Length: 345
Picture 1 (spheres, rainbow, N blue to C red):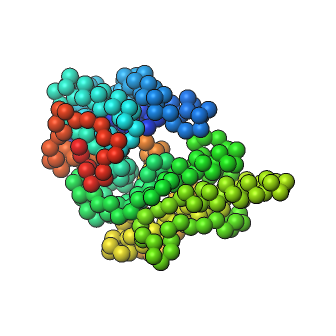
Picture 2: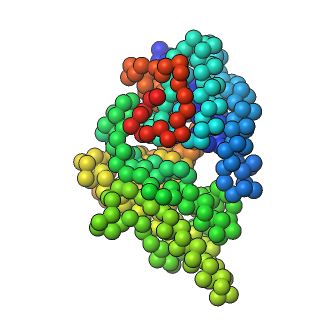
């Protein structure tokens, strides 16, 4: 392992300042700083606050990662950074920092795609990715189905969210139910005491004429809000646990059904689940159940690796280095809408 390059990875696409160190498929350090507490009172991430928090957290987080890995900057062989998609200001902080470190160390710099990095992080836990694989990435900003023939240079979009991403719907439904932000964990917790079949919430874009791999959760979010509002107007108590469980079931049902369908349609027998919402217990359980029934191998990273982190960026950087992909040019910038087809910018 010692002869494999040590890659330093930076992730600042949203509110998490992540710094990871990876050698080959081995994770040596995954240091994280979050500004989530500063966004709670606004009910969502405020880009300016996130950017300033990244500036303050960057250097201490790098030092912590190096200490955790028992390494120094002189040991680093390459630098990787999320260059998109994400919040422009937040991305720029990470890109500027990565450029500075790469220039000071005289090491190659790789600007990488945030979504592809969510796929790459699984290699740190389960080894080399089976290719081709189907990847289902679910987060606050993205709900995507991808065909991955070659993670280093060939990632193809199959489907995406056409309105609210799944994580965004979790946040909005949590607000309707009076639960804290971010909404994923509190809804997951509340749902454990509820009946997932209590309320028949709609499954978006599941009709015979709908796009087979695209997602829509705006209508589901609205249906939950109207159901809750009707109960409140009638002076009845809102069964929070049942609403949470029924909403969560609707999301997990659609996501897993479309992912399994994509695997079958493309003759692929490996599915990778990633992104922050992949930490949801019901989504993980239903994906496991349906993949087992369909003869599909399911790969899901640990919940910590599903959320944004520097480890995933370093993991993709390691893959790019080992595949002989050329590093990014010195004028690397941040692209808030970087398409998934662009694995390295």
